[in-house]
Image (tube, rainbow, N blue to C red; front, side, top):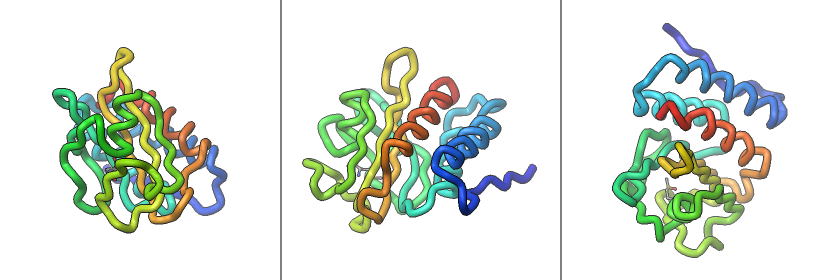
Amino acid sequence: MMFDFRFSEGLSKPELYRELLRAADALTAGECDGVANMANVAALLWEFLPDVNWTGFYRMVDGELVLGPFAGRPACIRIPLTSGVCGACAASGTSQLVEDVHAFPGHIACDAETRSELVVPVRRGGVVIAVIDLDSPLPSRFDLEDQAGIEELAGLLSGRI
Ligand code: SME
């Protein structure tokens, strides 16, 4: 089977996220293995989103975040909930839209090129089970439309990862 999902030039952000959600749904609907689904969605985010240098998952394991499937450079493996943008997202259960990572207290620099970041929680039954992390080398790369699109993706994945 061949999948050819990718970003098309000229799509508005809402259209882009509609396509992304449709592709993510198609890729994960019939598969119960969470690692396989996270891996495909990390690759999909990498293909669809312009100007990103890391797309992937951290999973909540025994009260800390542990690296999951991703696209991009190797990253820090374990993140306590007291650290970084991902920790803040998991601890508060709210999305973190960071326009300038250098201004975020405790930001963990996995890649010195990263300038802005969006981290969204994935919840199941009200509990944060993972976060979706997107990094960009551009300042202020992500906005509320990105946040809304990734939050919708997180909702879709809730029972699939
Ligand atoms: N920057 C993140 C750490 C994860 S990496 O960016 C992949 C943070 O501060 O939580």
